[in-house]
Each structure stands twice: as C-alpha cells, then as structure tokens.
Image 1 (cartoon, helix red, strand yellow):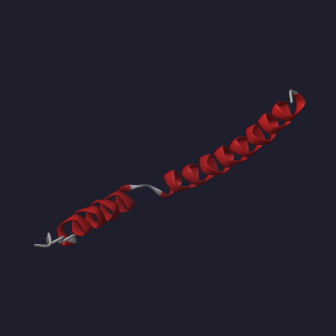
Image 2 (image 1 turned 135 degrees about the horizontal axis):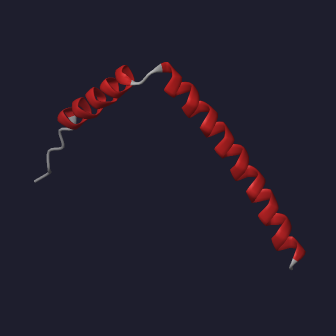
Image 3 (image 1 turned 30 degrees about the horizontal axis):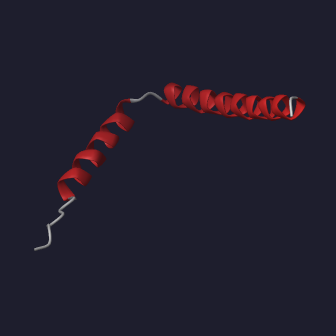
Amino acid sequence: MYPHNDHSTALGTVSGTVLTVVARIDSHDYLKTVILAFVGAIVSFVVTLFLKWVFKKFQ
C-alpha cells in the first residue's frame, strides 16, 4: 500500500496565510525590510572577509 499524500489543504492554508500577511503589511514595512536585508548582507560579507583575513594571519 502506498500512502496518499494530498497537499491541497496545506497549500491552501499556507497561501491564504501568506496573502493575508501581505495584505496587512504596510509599504513602509517592505522598505524597512529591504533596507535591513541589504545592511545585513553587507555586514555578513564584511565579517566574512575579516574572519578570512584573521585566519590567514594566524596560519
């Protein structure tokens, strides 16, 4: 016997939740999220370069 996987209920629940959240979020929040993601990516990149430099220095 093969288990029957019907993902339509889960897909409907997830898509409904996402659409509700998208409809309720203000455009100002989207801008803030984009800016914070950009700053986070830059900081992550700089920290990675710094740690590579530190590890090379001590090898």
